[in-house]
Amino acid sequence: MTTMKAPSLNNLKTSFKGCITDKEALQIRAIVHAVDGDLEAVIMDAGNLPATQKWARSCHNNPFSNRGWRRTMMMSALSELLHGFDAESLYAKGQDKNDAGEWPRYIYVNRGDTYAATLIMDRDQNRVFIGCWGDLAERGLLAE
Image (cartoon, rainbow, N blue to C red):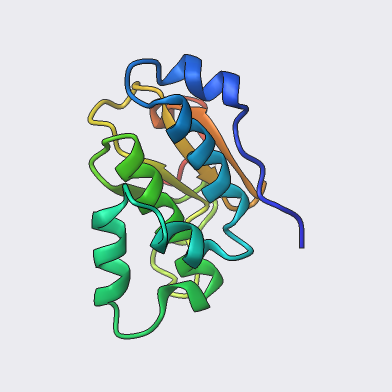
């Protein structure tokens, strides 16, 4: 399986200057790269992700044992590092939002502003990138 692509350290530091430290930029990359590996250890051993760790411990089943839930936990950790307002889902144009078996294509860290730089995971492209969800909407990439 291929490693999920993450933004470069330079792009993280530039886009989130004043919001994250250099160490947190490295941690973001480590979390993204571990999503299909040992994400549980990367998150649960971190000293600065108490909300994500608490949520993981409160789940009835291990959220790291399922590929979809690992991605959800990854985005929760990224939100915590960016001091976001949790992670939210966006369905791509053509996706059926009413199909319970279909995971949304995009999950992004809600930073409180449609056009604020944030981290967006694109499941189809197996990558996390820096952008804003308003741009996705304007380009007509989202389901209505």
